[in-house]
Length: 221
Image 1 (cartoon, rainbow, N blue to C red):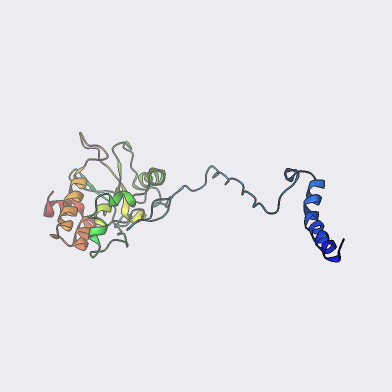
Image 2: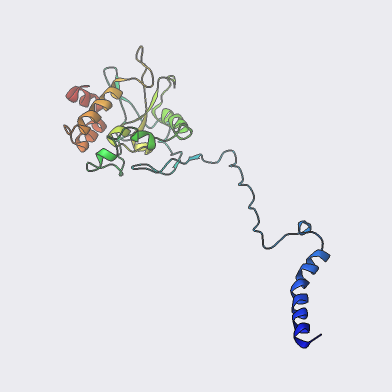
């Protein structure tokens, strides 16, 4: 065998050495293979009692997460009444607006169909907050007719989850339900006026936050 052929044969044997060593150690399944990335363990389930968090789609005016917000102390808030219509305590619930909504972007926010659904907190958030608000206001009526209401409504750019903008609104008049009341009709009417350019957004927000019954008398439905 010539020197050149001997050198080539030596190089081939050297290249095959790792393969022979692997065979001698058994099959690849007998131990971890460092060339294959490990699969991470499944995420641990949220433990009971943890603060619920809901992730919402990100969009114009939306927030990417909510947590249950602390409510005013039990018994610290008091309703005001104008005939059969309730007003919230101005100290506990003065109203708050969504900073993502401005008079210059109405077409892409409150005047766009379906926009309020993108910012509305889920039931898992609002229900425990509603319970806390009921305690704060001393509400003892049925929850089926007590509405956890945005004082400045979402459709007028109200803040979705600020306690300053939410209150347990009594709605116990005969035939009323938690989803149909006089304030709801006013909210829809004001939004229509704002989106038609007949009423400035800030004026509508201030009017309904200060005294929604007076706003009803002024603007009608």
